[in-house]
Image 1: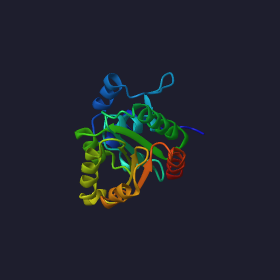
Image 2 (image 1 turned 90 degrees about the vertical axis):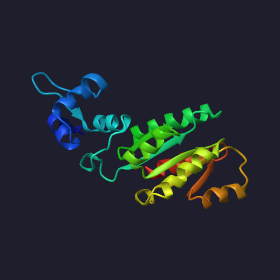
Image 3 (image 1 turned 180 degrees about the vertical axis):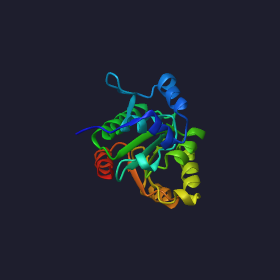
Length: 196
């Protein structure tokens, strides 16, 4: 199957920037190009999307894969569950490679997370709620109070042994699903594969 590529001028038009800016993206920010001898630089469609996601730039609808789904994992930088977070970030990277219609990214709680939600506009957000729920609940409130983001599905990943009463409390805040990081990891993996 032939991979779609875009010229620098096409990218400039799609992204609403100058061709000079696209060249700077290549030279200074690492936008990958491919070219054959004697032809102009071209950028693979998937490489452009990855670049835009990495640098938190809007992805023009015209270059989105057909029925693409966007998944965002928001985690705490202060979590003791670093191994699980690294596993999940790696798994999302693998899932993105397997599924052509999935665009996945991750970000730590804070101002960058708020900006990422606004620019990336995910269909599903995984929320790290393994230790400190305060950041996650604040993020949920912000999402649910913004009409534009009302359709985003929210999945909380909690620590082991969370009482059912507390899970229901999370749902009361607007979280669609609550999954434990230990006992339900296979269930989470299945759900993410089904989502993609």
